[in-house]
Length: 143
Image (spheres, rainbow, N blue to C red):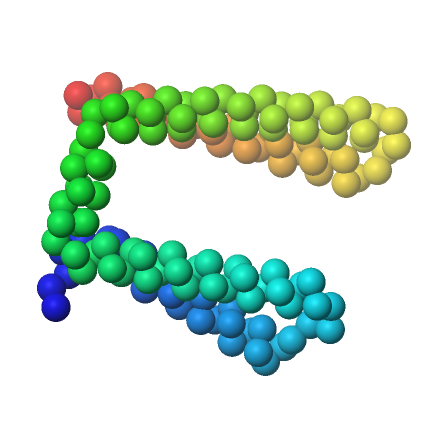
């Protein structure tokens, strides 16, 4: 058997390992709450199915070829870039909203938890700005 897509093969192995681990945990440390047991087993089976699908596609020459063509398709790349851009913008505004909520919560209650929410939101925004500057410098010098 030849592996045509190594990344897909590794992803399949990881998904299968996670599914087997979850099934093992369900068997060893079973919950008394039946809906929780059902949810855990279904999640494990979904992970195993995803792993088997990735493995099957990685071992199939035609499926691996289709995956490579799909990954290199310009429209798919554009959609992925636009999706990532919109996600980054939305999450940035969500962090700003969480920061403002933390600041208002701290000012009203003087509870330190709200102050930490404001602090960590601000730190993550500052880190995002530093990474954006570093990425801009990198791409300006290498393109």
